[in-house]
Image (cartoon, rainbow, N blue to C red; front, side):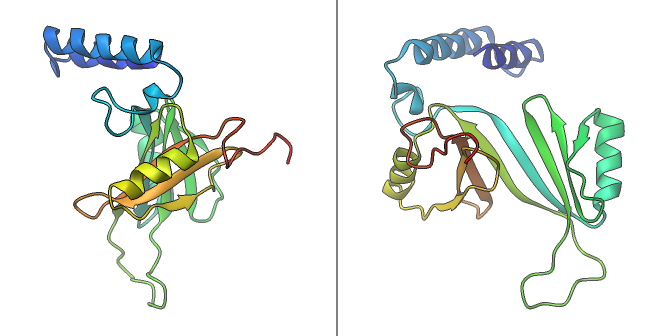
Length: 185
């Protein structure tokens, strides 16, 4: 909640929202905090999800080391999980940027001049419930693809957005969730 309020204040101070929008956003955030369990999983209007933060952005690049050095030097991002070959993670606040060398599509020869692209963007939502998230995505006619590669109890679904971009919606499974794994298992 504190992170959300900081973000709202930052947007207000940078002129990205006016005073009325700030007050409305703070009221919605406060209401979500006091909502009955599960109610905050939906957005303020009772539709969709309540996005907490940017989870990560995945870049496919020509030279991940050049991208790593650029973002760590210019933006102060902290490098982790650098495999020394083709990929690393760059952390900032509670989010990260994944930089990996561009892969050729399956069955195609590698491109000698690969074009960089944003592979996907992931957003973390509040009150994750795997079965409810999947049901909501399916209700909207989307075909969610599950992804559990982000570590213990990290669960997400990939769906295309209206323009065909790969949207990843993520959260942490808690006890009682169909994807919850006990620590150490």
